[in-house]
Length: 166
Image (cartoon, rainbow, N blue to C red; front, side, top):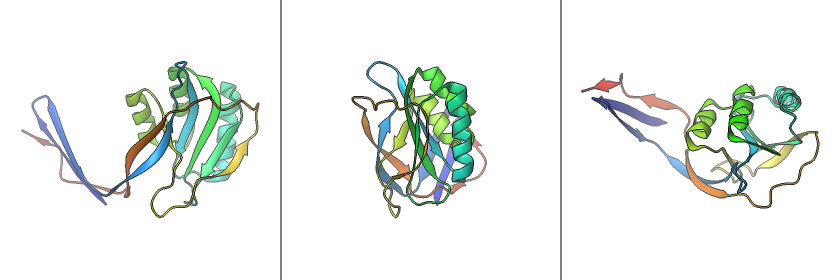
């Protein structure tokens, strides 16, 4: 469990969090040409419903084949499509897609790029393709940026009291 609190002093917010973290490997959506490949992070998404939702999104946004990855955790998936879109289109796709982790959308908007985990998490299996939403096959980009980033081991958060104001 993570413990967090926030204190507001005038126009400044101070945030503190204490929790176990792990370092994982991910890839960035942003390509050297300035466009982005499409990638998603899903929580609480039954695979059969996720496949149908992604097929609809694929048709609406005219995307190519979508690969869905899992690591054995039920209803938790990542997906990648090699269609290249600009950043605003990527955000539209993420916002429109059911089951996308809301924090993932916020972090994508904040960072100006999406990042999806490709390496394993502690106590989880290796990422493998669990399904493919058929579509036009597009080649993977020549080069993607690998990231090492920290993510919490625990998703449950205990917030300490109301927002403190000084």
